[in-house]
Each structure stands twice: as C-alpha cells, then as structure tokens.
Length: 388
Ligand SMILES: Cc1cc2nc3c(=O)[nH]c(=O)nc-3n(C[C@H](O)[C@H](O)[C@H](O)COP(=O)(O)OP(=O)(O)OC[C@H]3O[C@@H](n4cnc5c(N)ncnc54)[C@H](O)[C@@H]3O)c2cc1C
Image 1 (cartoon, rainbow, N blue to C red):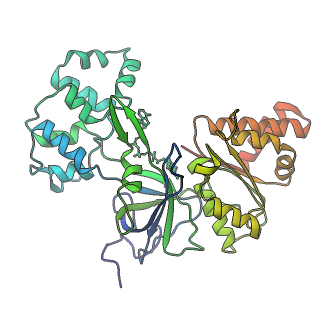
Image 2: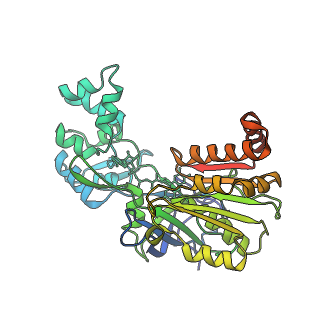
Image 3: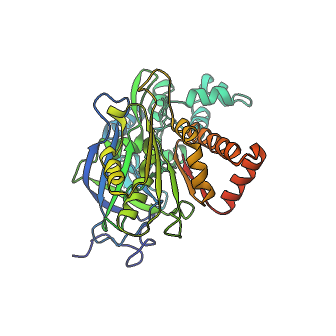
C-alpha cells in the first residue's frame, strides 16, 4: 500500500525534509537505563514503512517536537487567549493559536530575543536593566533554565494581537539524534538512543522539549515527524578492512551501534574497537547485551568500558585510552580511523588530550609530532568527531 504522506520525489534521501517531514510510527520505546540510574535513556524504534527513506551509519534523524498541551494551556491562560484565535504561520498558512503554540513556536526555552522584545513591550524596569549594554552575563543568568511561561509570570502583559507571538517567539526547531541502527540490517527501521533531559530550575521540574516528546510521550504506536540529516563527515572507512576505533560514552555510543550492525550485515570487515563509558555498569550500560554478543561473535574485536561511579576515584573513557595506549598506537600506526561521539564540552577535549599523549609517548617523538600526526589524521579524514 502506498503511503498517504507525500514526498517531494518518489523515493530516497531527498524526499523528506525539515519542511516536509515524514510521520513515522514508533515500534518500540524501552528504557535502556536501570531504575537506580540518575539518567533516563531510551531505545526508540521507528517504522519507515514505504517512505523510501534511506540513511547511512553516521547520519542523524531530525525530530520535530511539539509542546505539551499543559504548557500550551498555561501560556494561553497567561496571555488571556482561548486558543481559537486565527493566526498565520511563517509560510502564511492559516491555523489557530493553539496549533501554533503546539507545533510552531518555542515556548519551552526562553531566548534572549524574546526577552528583549518583551522588555520593550512591557517597559518592565528589571527586564530593561537586563538588556542594557554590558549586561550579557546577567541576561544569560536570567535566561538559564527559564521558559516563556516564567517570563509571563514574572512580567505579565496583555497582547492585543495573537499574531505578534510569531514575532516574539523563535520557531520551534527540530533536534538531531544520531541513528543507532543500520539499514543494511533493518531495512525499514530507524533506531534512536535518547536521553530524556530532566532538571529543576526556579522551583519547577523541567523537561527538554524534544527528548521528553520522544522518550516520555511517544509510546509504541505513537508518531514522530522526522527527516534525515546526512553527515558525510562521519562515515565508516571506504576500505572495508581499515581499523576502526570508536569512543562513545553515554548516548555518544548510538552511531557506533549502527557501525556494528553495518558490519554484522556483512558490508565490511573492519576490525572494531569500542570505548564506552557512563556512571554505573549496573544501571547505565547501554546496549550491554548487543555489545557483549558482538564481542563473542567477533563483530566487535575489542571493548573497553569506564564506569565513573563504580569506584571511589572517577574513571572515564580517556583513562582507558591511556591504559591501552600501546595497543592504540599500534592500531593508529596501521592506519586506524578514530571516531568520537557525545559530549563536546568535557569528554571530546579530554579524549583528544589522551590521544595526543598516546601518540607523543609511543612514537617517541614528543608532543609537537603528536600535533602533526593528529593534523595529518584530520587531513586524511581519519579523526572524525560528531560531538554536541
Ligand atoms: C549531531 C547531534 C547528535 C545528537 N545525538 C543525540 C543522541 O543520539 N541522543 C541524545 O539523547 N541526544 C542527542 N543530541 C542532543 C539532542 O539533539 C538535543 O539537544 C537534546 O535531546 C536536548 O533537546 P531537548 O529539546 O530535549 O531539550 P531543550 O528543550 O532544548 O532543553 C535543553 C536546554 O535546557 C536547558 N537546561 C538543560 N539542563 C539544565 C539545567 N540543569 N539547568 C537549567 N537549564 C538547563 C539548557 O538551556 C539546554 O540548552 C544530539 C545533538 C546533535 C547536534
């Protein structure tokens, strides 16, 4: 049966886009973390049915979130609108305000532009002080952990024209999630590994707009709007025998599950070495069974794990890289590709430092040579990062 959704071209990667997303049905949504974990990370499987969507390991899925009914109701109530008011979207299409606040406008995170516009509209002295030149730090501190609703509660104002919200609020943007499956194995399916963002701020429990939409509100049978975000800079080596080192703590492991499935499907015979880490082995060992099975059947050649909270001193993946630096240097000398995925702020720079240290030590040529070696790896597209 043909899909009722319309793609711009018949099949393939170009058919669906951010502006013409495919509505996929969830096949599975299960917890990957244990009940005692500080994190909630979920495995999601989505049915691509006859969409014709194609992707490769290393690609991400762009997911278009929607705001929760509760959040929309509270904003409507504060603004004294019913939700039935007619407005037009960014492309001039008519819809009612409730639909606009649900699917088009970002209310879950307060932006600097919104605050500046609101300050001018309300002439509130506290907001006026935040947008004065030289107040960037104070402004950032105010914005951190606040939503549009917090601003409405702090500085109420009545809008005469609901259409103004399209000028005041940014567009609700899609979020990217690394695809954790290979189409060579699962032809009409996309898997994602999503950590649900949860935190407390300004006296309230908060959730990330998109991760909670996927993780908490998309049960099997539920639907998600998606498109493929291709990443040519994070591909398995074209040489099917090249060595592959993968460093992916937390949800950073997602694309490497796709790499391993690709190998399992027989696409290449790359020798593969995975570094995985998280807080506790008993609670946070994502895809443990998959990785242990791949280790047994030889799909995965080496696996090194680092669980930071399982002992007194914190151990991260970079320490495992240091401990195994002799072997790592052997792989690198034999032309291995080095992939890093996950946290950009601390993990990726720490892993790079450990990599440089390994090269400097085992080449016996010191840190300057290590920098040159890494620059050459980058030039040859053998040092590949997908960090966020
Ligand atoms: C290429 C790429 C691949 C990615 N792959 C994955 C993946 O495989 N799995 C995955 O889970 N994620 C992945 N991400 C991250 C993902 O895209 C989203 O950024 C993430 O899910 C958060 O989005 P959200 O809509 O849930 O949160 P948002 O609603 O955007 O909220 C996040 C924001 O909340 C605020 N915030 C967060 N914590 C606090 C706090 N403690 N106090 C105050 N404010 C806070 C911050 O302003 C933060 O920016 C990837 C990102 C990129 C760019």
